[in-house]
Image 1 (cartoon, protein in one colour):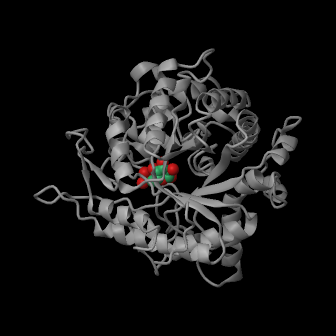
Image 2: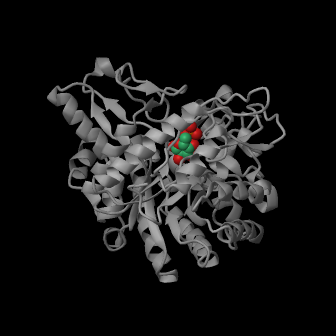
Image 3: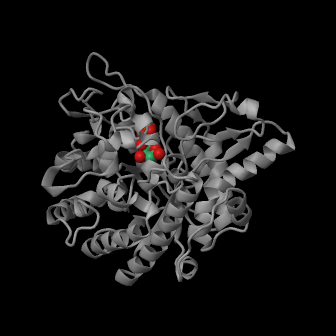
Length: 475
Ligand code: BGP
């Protein structure tokens, strides 16, 4: 069977520490900012947009605190992933498991030991770990002390944390991502940067200054990584998804250019090593003056990322018309409704061809290998009377996206791998709920924290196993 995927294509799945591990205070772990966010039913988005609510500790139910308890189930879970044939497993290291307060003098040995065991198990199973250094879980203490990434001192703390994990896992982990969805800081500054912009005079100034700190931190740890192990592969990670113009009016077309640039801005810096030409005017018009320290621009230039990873769930639609824009939908990335697309139960519009477009655009622009590190359909799965999950809707979504990814590769794009999101059910980042599921593996746990935590295989489990076995030929 012919397949567009290279022989050593890295098929796998993705999770993040804070959404699956649970054990939120076990073995010395400190609180991260996501640990103080409730689920959607208890005011999650109000707290994300106004973090003072979360900091004041207003809530009493946090599904992520126990989540699916991956912390104590990882061996059995990895065995199921190995059974599907995973070549890679994307997870993140919880920063506050290693540095509970973010600025502790010494790392927490128990936290380090957990990831030793986890990565050893991956390696034993022939699964290559792909590790996100910071996935929305900056230590809460840093937010309280210095408004998170708004403060330049956090660069050094992050660097120190990265140095500890690079040295500790240098023979176990090769692929690293510096920040999950680095552009998230623009849409949910609390999530992305551990910052509260509600009290700042110019929220955009604070946000882009924090983004500058993250970009410098990303370049600095790229240098550090190669000093520690020249074989490391360091990538950036973007919440991807092309923006289309709502109509063929030139104003709408221009709006789409701006919307796409808003995203590319981050990779422009991380991959090309400099602030893009268009940022000058953007900063001026938004009264943003970056405080750039001596050596920052040089380090950005000298240490670009080697590969570009991104999440893709959906394309977006934008308009220049303020009246039309009143009708946007969605939470993290509000967008207009595209009449040509169907949507998930959460209103995320399904557009496999948009993935091909996104990949082609990114590859044309950067000429660096891509890695699709998130993709998938969040849906409510209802077990049948005999406990089966017939998730043909998920299979259809994934099959169309794998096909689109294959088309992009045939278009000439270099792509290293594919790790669909939430390969095992976990807590949703946007809603904080369990009922929004992505997995091939079902976990018996509901929104209220009930359930045995038993794992079972959905229909998509068997489908994906075949996809991997056939290297993408059998969809
Ligand atoms: C991305 C995040 C993930 C993940 C995913 C799905 O933004 O990197 O952490 O959760 O989206 O989103 P949700 O969980 O809201 O369905």
